[in-house]
Length: 540
Figure 1 (cartoon, rainbow, N blue to C red):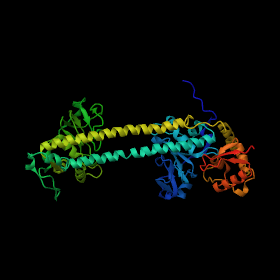
Figure 2: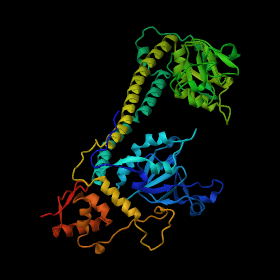
Figure 3: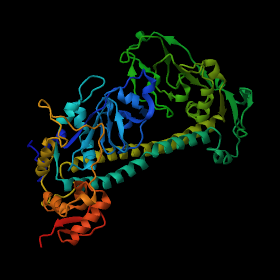
Figure 4: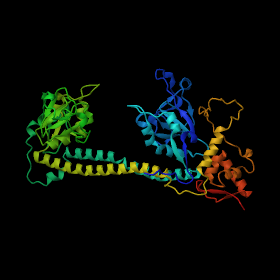
């Protein structure tokens, strides 16, 4: 495979050449006086959204002064360097300090901030590959500084950032709409279960039968639970205690005697759906302690943390965790399964959980839970209808997952396209990035203007402890100020590019531009959009 060359006008460079900044520092947790102050404290978990306006934690000036952490300015870009969050980035909308797991990049003059944000996002996978360490891989500041990228001309940087703003806003909007689907499906399934176990789902079905089905379970009916009268049911229904609807089995066996048997544990079952997520053997799970034996046609129910709602129907034999109950239904098994998945059943079991540290429901408490029970033919009809409606929900869920994968891939695809130079057109009149890099290098090598002596051994990076924007006043700008800057940019530039280079306030910039246009030094196309407002040296 051949080497991919950068687009015309682009140049290879390292992050150290186009941004400065540094890393955060640790802060002792043992000193409470360091926390809860007015200084935002950025951690990797805060990163990921484009603009970071608030942090989950704050620190005090005392904490800052007693750590190696620094204050980074609003507009800097924070980057996660540790663990599963490596490569997450956010633009700071606040002056903030960061912990040692974050680095911060401040774009140098001539590097568009929004462009750099997208550039860092695009490099996430490369940063992850460079991560070192075991359970918590990390990248160092040295790795970040030496990381090589391709830099486009400044005008193209702005075009790329503007285009990505536009197209990714649409992708984000699509993702936001997609993210509502899981909650809607959950509510739909629970609404189906509620209707099914209250008689509402089969109201019409019952009215269509001239023959009334007798409820063979009514002899064991109860009308109250936990000292309270139970809600009314259709006149052909009754409440059974759980012990009347099913037998809770307990038959511990030595798993070593059945190494190839299927083993079910709570983590193998998905909450709220009855789905078995995976199957493993006793041997594969390295099971040692005693387990319950279960058989085809039973339900397997996790008594640990009943609010997690983990229950499934099995059509195969195996062994289950001692923290689960094998249940033999006396009523239609699928109907009982759907009832046990319903919000009402979960509410009742959660109220009866016995422990505080590791809550669970014991067999005695479970045996008393009421089960709304129709006749056997209606139970079968309910199970059939719920299964059919859930199949529709499952189909929608599959479409959602497929669409989510596509939109997730689309974001990265657009970023990759942008940084291959394929998202926006190149303009041959743009000043090449090589010229921009030369200016950046020249500025970095200039001696300090304060007259302070430079250290011979090292070149100190600009401090980010207190970075203040240099704003030039209109009265201080020379007559040909914008003309000269525009000449440095190759004679043409967008108004937004020239403004950022000028270091004038926005009002002063346009006042100065107006002066130089009137003096016929600069030609202005007059567009109201700053990113499309083109300026050029008047050669007439």
